[in-house]
Every structure is written in structure tokens, then in C-alpha cells.
Length: 260
Image (cartoon, rainbow, N blue to C red; front, side):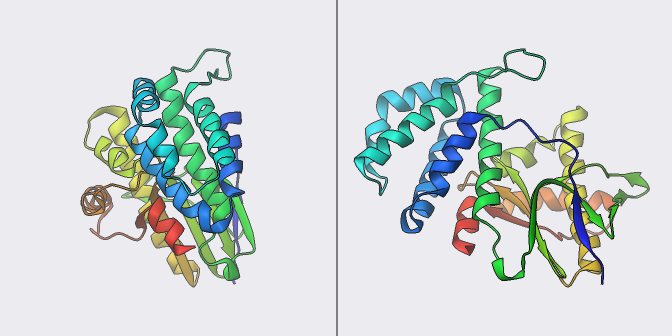
């Protein structure tokens, strides 16, 4: 029987505002946790930049907090964590300040990864091990993924759960439709998006030949996206490798919490 495992090169930047907010959400009571997470995901989808947060705080803060099934004390804690998430500054590894709008986008993706890691997997009874930032390995060798002779290897999945003959992997994006639309561009950024989609598809296809049950998800923290459009773009990109068929699944945070 084939053995799945992960190679983890380096841990990514996460930051205290992400850890603190993730810890608060994960520790909520189950009946409140899931609707609160989905409500916050919709809030994040409408607040993409610093100026959006200031406007939201001025015009919609009270209405937003009142909609949450939380106590008054919990709402105050949550709002303090959200302020830190949007307003606290951070620096890169060389000590240079990260532009705040870039930092917000980065934190959204990292928060989604943390939530998937702590709340998943979908099929708990089949999972024995878990990893973040995983370069998949089979029988202790890193999986080599190619597309028409071109190497797509040395990429990773954000979160992976696995057990005997079972693999469940997630590539987490703040807004998967925005991510896929970037693939229509020319230049390096568009190429990287297309190659990531090709990698996910070729990886899922390969793993399904090796393991009995495989689910690879390209997942969106933004719940209100056009999944039909996302499939259309994904199919366009994967067709560069041959067959026009998807071996990974497109889901949103709302789909994910409903699976749990």
C-alpha cells in the first residue's frame, strides 16, 4: 500500500492578529461558531482595504455586531480582535513595513488556513495525520507534477489531512474568483495563477491513481462567488495540460462549514 506524507520547507508568516482571531473563532460553542465564521467571511468580502474598514466601522459596526449570536462581552472581544486584524502593522523578514492593504489580504488567506486546519477534516474517521504548507510525498518521495513536459513541482497545499488510503487537501484563497480572474492576465502573475490551477488538477489526478479516496479543494473564504465562473476559468487553465476536466473541487467557506 502506498504511503502519503508531507514535506514542509518553511513555515509561512502568520502574525498574532491572525492567531488571536482564529483562536477566538475556533473556541466558540459549535452552534454559534459556524454562523459567526460565515458572517465574518461575508464581512471580510466587503471590506478589502483599510478605507473600507474605516467606513464600515463608522456606518455598519453596530448592525454587524448585533447580527452575531454572541453575548455582549464576546462581541466586544471580537471587535477588538477585528480591529487588530485590520489595523495592526507588521514588517517582513528584513524589517520593512508591509503595506497595510497587502497585509490585510495576506491575513485573510492565513486566517482561512488556520480555520480549515483546526475545524477540519470533513471525514474525521478516515484521518490520522495533518499538516500545513505541505508538499505531497508518496512513499517518502516528493510527488513530481508535470504538464506537457513542463515541471509544476515544488508547490504546496495549504492544509492536508490524511489516513490509510485517504487524502483531503486544501488550497485556501481569500476570494477564489478574484484569484482565478488574475489568471487571465499576461505576465508572471497570470502565469503563476494558471500554473497553480494546473498543479492542483494534475496532483489530484495523480493521487487518485494511488489512493482509494482523494479530495483536493480549491477553497474560497469569500462565500459569495460565482462558482460556475470559477469552474469555467479553471477548465480553461487545466486544458493547457490536455483534457478539459477538473479533478479538484471548488468550494466556499460556507460549503466547508456545512460539510463539518
